[in-house]
Length: 78
Image 1 (tube, rainbow, N blue to C red):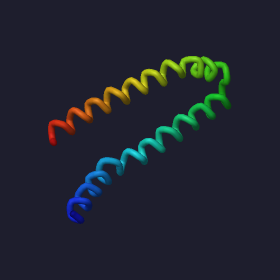
Image 2 (cartoon, helix red, strand yellow):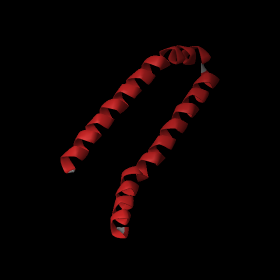
Image 3 (cartoon, rainbow, N blue to C red):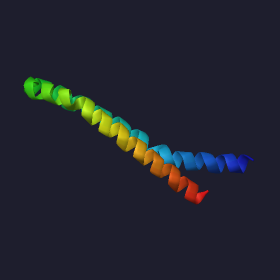
Image 4 (cartoon, helix red, strand yellow):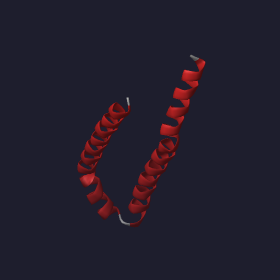
């Protein structure tokens, strides 16, 4: 049982390891980008903020499709 838990823990660590760093990097880039944009040109930034709901919907849809693909791949290996 302990060997199985260690094997599963290792698989989870390999699967999540880089993703958390990438998520933090992308979120910080997003926030810093908007801060920089507001500093240099607030009018264009306001236009981008108006387009943000569309970008969020597309991001959520892309995440959903990726999750579905991941689940299909996991079924193939199970």
